[in-house]
Length: 127
Length: 298
Length: 81
Image 1 (spheres, rainbow over the protein chains, first blue to last red):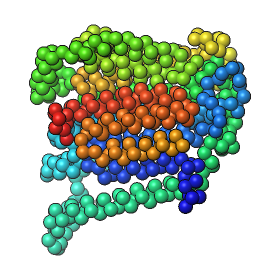
Image 2: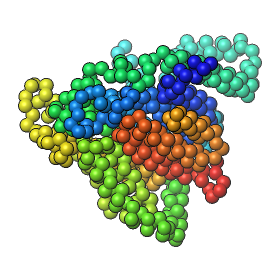
Image 3: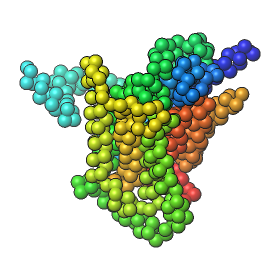
Image 4: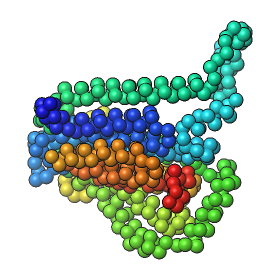
């Protein structure tokens, strides 16, 4: 048991990222309100970024901004995952904004944002 | 044969239902006579919802279990012998300053070595704001009467109770926010920040100004035409600069853009121009999201 | 140790954000989640990510959620959702 706890603490960032992914995924599937689904999607996104950026961290080194003309690669962390996550954060906000625009259009048509009510109304319309 | 297929494909593209084939229609009629009375609608839906909840929880728990098991077998967190830090990262740091002229290694990487990915990302932003415009624009061709009435009502309420605290504070803060955003954009290659962060900060400042002083004031200097000009010019500028770099690099030619002294603002070659372009696109996009969702027009 | 506390508060924010009854609380707790994420990025020695997450997560996405809530009439005085 103690060994398990030590492993979890050694891999703290990745474990937290996976737990957050699970929380976001369950809520995405089970919540009925569309806005909560969008929020769960955002939480899933953030967890993946946390996992990625944790792969670039190296103990005892500083941020990749070159100081004191020190050009050796052993003073700085790995800059590549940081660049990937930067792209990802901006894509995440774009997708969230698009989701919110879709929710607004659905509200204008059906005057509700609960998922099952929208499905029943849409079925009635199709008949 | 080919013409029939093409006409069916065109019908499907335009959203019409595919007509059932003759044999299918006859077999459906036959099945209706033979089948017993189907279960009532409510019971079937309840069963489906119950099954859906149980299987959703099962799938999620299994997925998280597998992921956690994999995580414990990854290379140790924070160790210098990570397979992720290989010779690519070494090259970016050791020769980044000499080849790109940027002190900020991350900015030098995403705007010089991997500038094509950043171009793709600016395109994603542009695509998102175009989709939001398609969904939410309200002009002469798409009018919804009840919404117009409601909006007029809200504008009257706004004019009647003006929020003095918000206006005074915004009057003091918005210039500082815009200035700080421009500082972060222009110093992208020297310190943390860059095009995306600075653009988001500027967008946030514009949103505060629009929320506190009303839409009419913002339309004086930021309307649909400005938005279109700025975003398309910035993206084109980015594409042309990077095309020049690709051309000279792929053919082994010397690109005559001076790298300057590291640490000065006018250094790092094209990174400053690319930062400014990206900053403009991001700022316009963030403000555009807010304007279209809250008002339906820019 | 401090990192473990931050990660735990991240998980708690995520759990609370998605089990609230009022939608307004969901948006506010999401902004707190974003703030804790910013501090974690700073502790992972990535200042670019910290600035971007602060501006985008708590700033723009939070504002968009509030404006959407207003448009779907879920913010009527003290009675919402």
